[in-house]
Image (cartoon, rainbow over the protein chains, first blue to last red):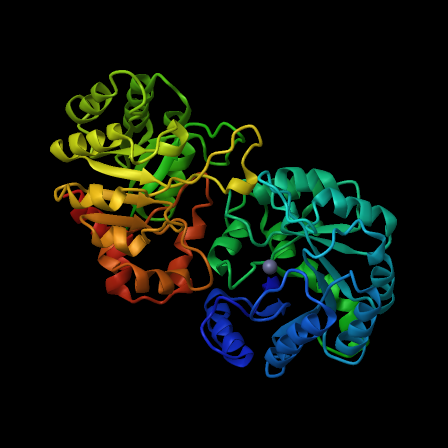
Length: 260
Length: 254
Ligand SMILES: [Zn+2]
């Protein structure tokens, strides 16, 4: 059972969201990926206004419409507009099929404007995914580091959070969030560098490590390889490849009456 | 059957890698049906006593290679009397080729010593492997920031050397000139190690003729499975699979 936490309808053949998700599923089938979580539209926008993030979410909703048996969606939000975010959570999650949120690089996640959004997601059991990177050649202005994630996690110790990309520089990212037991790490979207997953399992335990790919910008091959090629047990691999994400999503799926 | 043209032995200085011990590396390659791996030495990027690096690479391949490992010597043309290193690779060790890391050695490809190096390699019939980068710049140690190799005049240098055999390693991010322009300029190949995005090989064979693609793993820095799985993700057919996995490398080194 493979569930992929981190997918986009970009960098793949097709002109419409429908065509793109269909092309993606062909590759997912070949690699044995059963379920995929999608967020953000066909063209990325780093600092979208509410109109733009609604448009991006509409594209994902359209892509999901024929694939509810295999695909989930997270609503893309920009926390610079907290009021509009809460409305979009209602539209996409409460009254729509989405099951979580994606926060990217518009605003660093230690900002207090995130708090209301996190509280609302906690009420709904919606999954919270925050992109993080620690780039030795410099982050974007609104791009969160894993250290920012640790600040957010300390303010919301009872809410599960996902640290996107494990901070990119995973050797620092793992350490940054290690003490915050409510934080899991996403493996997606970095080079298939040997040793990454071994360290994550050693320092966090396999229960806090979640496979994601970042397709279409990345391949399933390079990202699955991080788990397949790691010197860890098969039990740990199964947790990382699907069981952890399913466990995290089960509460909201149950509320929505979706069979996992 | 697979020939890996892009593997390394010895230690990466910034972390231990799970297969940085040569016997373990060889055993892992055997498990996945590799018949050859062309290996450089990580030491060649950082050490100034390159003659010793190459001597140790050769003895490591002989002691632990089990017929699998083929040494690709390091040459750093910024060092005094570097010409003798390439001569030793050819005459004393009978190597098939050399592997260059211009960004780690601190020269650009418009350096006249690089042109001389290519000419010497051409005259010795040595394959030249040119590594465009080793590690994502975003995760490099903050005191050791190594830029990508810029192709600069490479296209013209290739065109002027019709007998040169050149392999571009880790070359997913090349240009301008583009990867396909460099490939078309002469006897030039690229490895697949850094091909990324969904269905990466489907996309790559639209840019580079499959006859010019080679299996490269960037192992043990990368996980070996990363490049093996690309043949499952893209269904290229037996002819193209075999060409990339071993036939092209075999005929290049024939
Ligand atoms: Zn992503």
